Image (cartoon, rainbow, N blue to C red; front, side, top):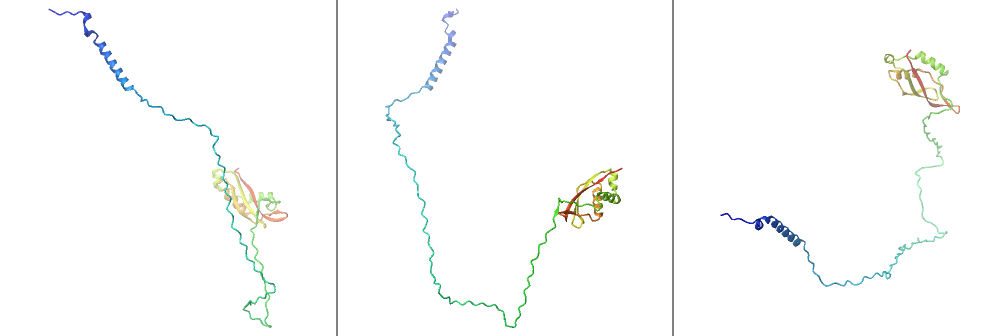
Length: 224
């Protein structure tokens, strides 16, 4: 014969609920146990009264130390010497020269001090500039007569202007020729060669006096 239970009397029906309630209660107790704090109460300590009266503070004045005294100056001792005292010290002078009445003294000849040689100054700006003898028209004729167009420049088709700088001294002699701007192809060398062939120039003048001055000219190269 089978045993029959009433559903309302079954205790396993609510076991899950009871298990959850037990776990929740145990966790709550554990949390409270860890967070529980207890303070020991003792007797109160009297710290007294804080005084805020600062008027009685003593101000210490700044002390000034006097500078050290300088040592007294020692005056040199002055010994008076009478004016009528005679000096008995004898000073001997030995010229080591045998001079007699017949000795003739040669006249001393003083050589003049050598003068320092001052390099002639090159004037960049003068009142009258140096020029080719006969003027610039003669200079153009001189170029046409002595000028040769470089072959390398002809083959390469090089044209342009060569700028030259040179010095003309007080005698009209040309020196220190430089190419300040060239075009290459042998034109620079040809311009220098023609300028060296030129005769003496008329020197530049400053206040009517011939001076050494620097000149600048241009020689134009063109193919026809």
